[in-house]
Amino acid sequence: STGSASDTAADRADSKDDYDYYLCLPTLDSSSTMTVDDPDNHDAAWHQRSRTTRQLQHLFELDLYLSSVPQLAASTRQLLQSSSSSTNSTANNHHHNNSNNHKVITSSNSGRVINVLQGEMAHCTPSQADVLVSDDATTCHILGLWSHLGLDYSSRSAQHRDQMQQQQNGGDGNKLATVAHIDSPDYEDCIRDAVDLHYRYHSSQLSSSSSSSSKQQQHQTRLNGDDSTIILPVIKLSIHLMGGYNDNDGTSHEITQGVLRALSNISDGYINRQQHHHHQPRLQMILQTCAVSSSNDNGSGCPIGRGLALDVSSGKVYLTEVGEDVESSSSSSSLLLDNSTTVVTTSTSAKGPDCLLRQARLWASFIFNNGDNDSNDDDNKRRLQIIHHPNDEYLYISPFYFASHPFPHRMLALNDALLLQYTSSSPEVEKDNFVRCVRETFRYMNGTSCFHVFKKKKMMNEDDDDDEKDYGLDDWWDDEDYSPRRYRRVGLNGWAAVA
Image (cartoon, rainbow, N blue to C red):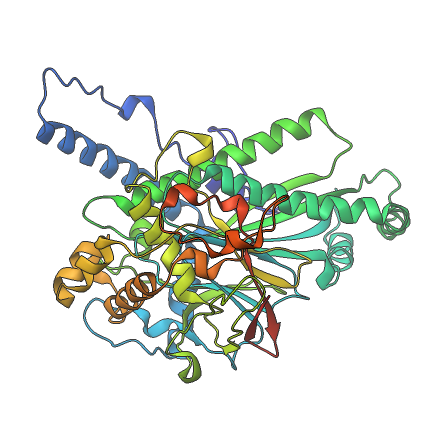
């Protein structure tokens, strides 16, 4: 939550009377630190030096802020260090890989898993999954949101306060979790949509149980023994952010700025809304973990945390690595044979279904949109792909255009060292399996196309012969004309494609 500049986060955190800690994000784009670029008087090198200077100053401000809040600094240390003695890693321990303190999640050791790949977002409740996880972040950031419905109250008695706290925790149906793998600073709309979803989810719970909530409030007022105590519903949203490091070109810090700025703007919006709508439940956004920038750097220009897991029931987070199960190491993908028959591949893996297809979306966005992912056109803006929704049994892969293209062919002809340089934003710190995964994805894209993977919706007055067109031009493709692929969980971590 944001606060006034005069009321510092450290002062609030030191107050023993405050039950919750409200964190004031630093101003990352202060006008006093910005310089005006004059292209007539300065060359490109000057612009780069000016940009680097601004980034360093913002980075210093952020690091100073993160270290000034004891609770935030402690949670970051706990996340990055506490699990190192009890977990293992399948990654090699060479000089730039720091995943020895990441718990390896497999299809059998962590319950029901939903794995979120780069550019994706997933929402779920404890009835749908046990763990939300995302891995392989270098400059990318992993955002975790966990919310539950509680009560806002005022009580001077610590004993009364504890009694009320025990009763407001509720069961698993009172909790919602989200994980997103963010690769750009421009996803504020997507993050706002996610926060709004949490708010709507718990607001609907209040609406459906308004009578029982009234009885509960009366009972808790009697517990206090103070009829003047005001008890109102509050939606508590815990925020966990991990990712990035001190990379040379500042990509990590740009994403950090974008995410924190988005969270600050969203928080301000809810504060303004609640000032004019007192009868609505209050949203309390609490930044609990912020392992970014220098705090996630091992001192040698390498990220410490690469993967983050969020326990859907408890809201706890820990470092993780998604292991490659033996039975799914080939990462085969389901194909549509015709308009009514699907080859159903039931894969058992913590990585989830059809990873090659999901990874192909990132490259398709670059290849077929000419690398333009920063369009100001709302219709063409990149958005995080939501693969799982609360109260929905399916995992979804939305349709997108891809086909064989000269670019993957050229990349596959390169040796491993060159392929790594051309395909990674942080080649010096990638995992050992990065190049192999890129090659598998390019081979998959060259071997099929979107027309053979996604099922076309039946349109009015459409002949069956239209399904036999010799597709090959992206002019004939419209996402709206095709259905998303759906997958149903089979057993613990098996996934079956649903025709």
